[in-house]
Picture 1 (cartoon, helix red, strand yellow):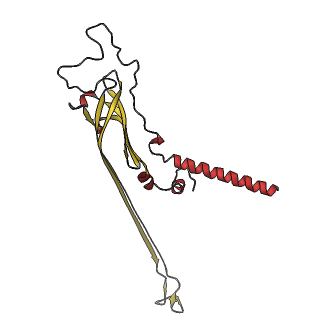
Picture 2 (tube, rainbow, N blue to C red):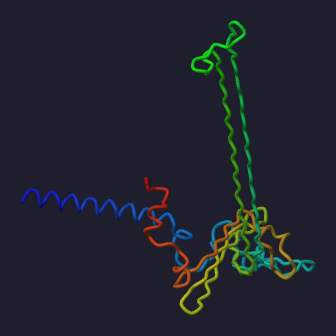
Picture 3 (cartoon, one colour):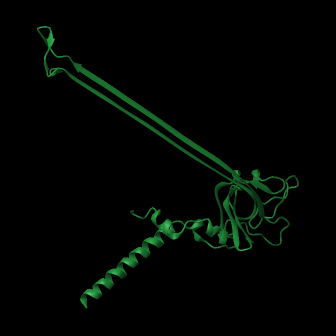
Length: 233
């Protein structure tokens, strides 16, 4: 009875340990933190100038006759042109070679070398030859093109705008999402109320998919478990 209970407890403990390692390995591979889609509403706080009713000039709603109508206040929308393209390449080659040799000629007695059964026994020689060759190369590239319209969430005291937004597209059994957040300088906004993504400071850009097609392109949970950084194997 005691043996059965001990075996069962050991099996339960091993199962719990395996489950914890599996979930920890899979959790580290969740795309974009596993967050669900949600609207990026602007943050209305004390930094936004409150309008003073009853006056001709209302602070925070001013416009210029010489500027284009572009995003400048909290709640305004801005189109971000996604134009991300990066390439990185690194290679290293190392070659080392070393060779050494030494030879000691035996003495000659009466004009003849000292031998035994015709083989010289007082002659010595030594040789060493070693070499090493190493080669490494890494190449990485990515490209992202498209458009996403974001909302001004905050306006800083220097005029810069904190923008953020996301877009979700559902096609058949799959979902494609794009998320963006960053800081935009008003002078970088084009007259058509757009700005390229490489002019967005502290940019956070995420693109991914969910659904049948996205799941088919991912490795299984067992493969992810054994390739997790937390797995000691």
